[in-house]
Length: 134
Image (cartoon, rainbow, N blue to C red):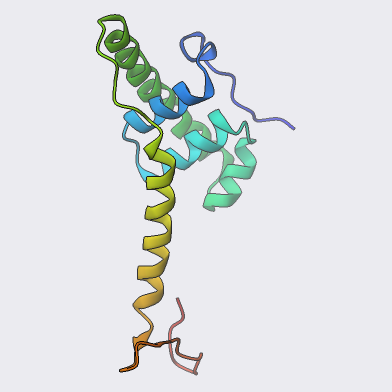
């Protein structure tokens, strides 16, 4: 399948964990972070990522040039810190933090439409005419 990203030489030799850390340290926008993870780490095609975001493939391609610059910059900063003897903080907590954030954000979205009864049960409203869904 075409449209896969070829990594620049600065990033080509990095391990997956180093790439994940560089993407995290680049502090990208939510959409750019998703593009980086899907295209750089998971090696998904740009068309698939564009479909997931509801964008055109060309838009994803334009975002990738910015993303690559930011990830290269953060990877070089991480490498400089390692060379100077300052080992950056451990990265193992990141995946659990991302998963917790996803769960909380989906729960908050759900709670906007739900009510809690006195006994603590959560009620989800049924769809009615004229009422907006999530």
